[in-house]
Image: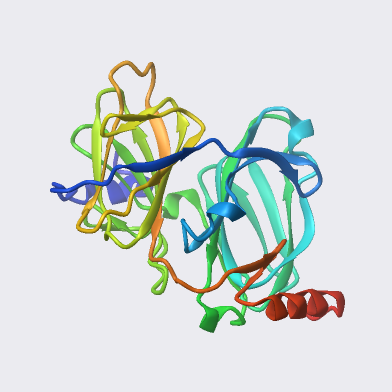
Length: 301
C-alpha cells in the first residue's frame, strides 16, 4: 500500500505495557429514544451520568438500514456551551449552520463543532436508502470558553490517523494520542481521547490513561473483555478511576466470530457545575435561561 491514504500506517507503533490497568465500574445498556425529526437512536450516556463521565455530556448511537428511522434527520436546532463530535461510520449527512458553513459528513468522517456562544444548525441525510450508522458525542466546554466564537471542522476519513498493531488491532485516532501517534484533534482543557478500535478474535490492546481522567468503552460489534468482565455488544462500560491506575487493557475473546469494534473515550474532568436544558449546557440556571431568551430573540445566529 503506497497510496497517500495509508501513509500514516508507516509510523513505528510504540509498545505499551501497563502495570495497573483499570477495571469496570458499571455496564450501561442505553435508552432507546428519538430526536430531531423522528431519528431513532440509543442514548448511551445520558444526563444522570454527566457528573460521573465529566467532561462528556451525552453519547448517542444510531444505526439503521430502514430509511424511516433516519430520513427526517435533524432539522434546524440551536446549541450553546459545548462541543459536538459526530462520527459517521456509514452513510451521508449534510450539515448547514447559521454561520454560513456547509459540509458533507460521510463514511468514516468526523465533524467537530464548537457551539460556543451559539449557532443554529441542521443535519439532514443525503441518502434515501441503505445503512446509516454513527455516533454523536457531546463534550463540555470549560466555563471560560462557553461563550467563545463558534467553530467547526469537517475531518474527512482520510485525515484521521490510523495504525495497526503487530497483533492486527486496527485503531483510528479521532482525538488524543495512542502508541506514540497523535489523533486528528487535540483539546487542552478536557484532553479528549477518542479511539475507534477494531480487534480480531483473540487479540489484546492496551491504552495508557491518566488515573484522574474519566473513561468509557462502547462496544458496537461482537463483545470485549476488560479483565474477567465481558462487555456485550451495544453496551457501554464505565471504567473505574482507581488512584495509581495507568490505563486499560482490552481483550477480544477467541470465541468471537468476527472482529470486535469499540469506541474508547476518555477525558480530563472539568469539575464545574452542569446546568442543561435541551441543547444548551451552561454552569447556572440563569445562564441557561439567558440562552433560551437569546435563541427566542434571534441572537443565536
